[in-house]
Length: 134
Image 1 (cartoon, helix red, strand yellow):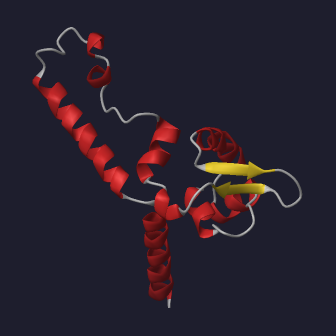
Image 2 (image 1 turned 60 degrees about the vertical axis):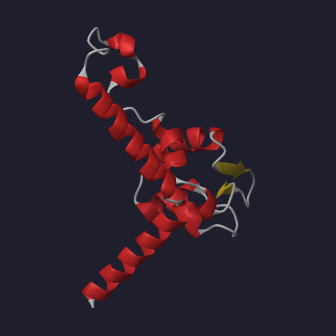
């Protein structure tokens, strides 16, 4: 959905039904994920005949981390990393530190990838698929 909105950035707002059709995603599912995306300030809605959804800022200024956080919440691979009280062994557990480091690396990586970059990769892959079909 976000890639579709990025593809249409700078044009008129896009209807969910059109995104659903192009991306082969359920419109019902899209109607659920627009809520946290809008709350996170990543998308906006416009009412009316020329309404729909659009990004709130340039795709180059939206990171994969922001999208992930909006839809999934903070990245935490195991509960005890954020909530040490969940496990009586968390203070002596050697793997808890590993899970914490791994979670941090995932966040760092997602923070370096922009929506614009994801859209460019998507376009390249689509072009490569077209070329292989010829």
